[in-house]
Length: 164
Ligand SMILES: Nc1ncnc2c1ncn2[C@@H]1O[C@H](COP(=O)(O)OP(=O)(O)OP(=O)(O)O)[C@@H](O)[C@H]1O
Ligand SMILES: [Mg+2]
Image (tube, rainbow, N blue to C red; front, top):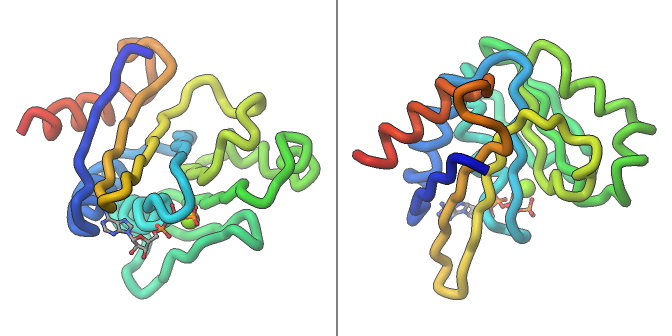
């Protein structure tokens, strides 16, 4: 783990600002894993990323926890998944959702840790923590060498705003 950015998400506006930047820069084939407890703000972050990706504001991004996956049309497709109700990677494979990781769109996965063993190696993780005072911190990291990573541009943008 070579890069590790921390952002305070004190308000929904903070989440919107960060999500817009990430969505703007996301490329086809990117996979973003969103981890954090119930109510941490994963779906809220996805809504912001969707805006940055060009999903129209009249298209409301809702939690896919029952349907497991929702697809939206942005500049590139957005595949929004939520693995909370799944028992493991076998369920993801049975549902055929693993294939979406390698299609021409951005895949965002809430509760991705449910299927850790089938996640693409090259991915970005956003882990949102929520403390008892309702303060939220997003930690963003990749598991690969930043210079070789497809997320080089995204991480450079995050580095810039983390210093601003
Ligand atoms: N940065 C933030 N500041 C303040 N409130 C927030 C923030 N992000 C999310 N919230 C609020 O927290 C609540 C839960 O958010 P959200 O549904 O995004 O969580 P989640 O992590 O997706 O939960 P789940 O695990 O159930 O899917 C919502 O009411 C949302 O408005
Ligand atoms: Mg959610």
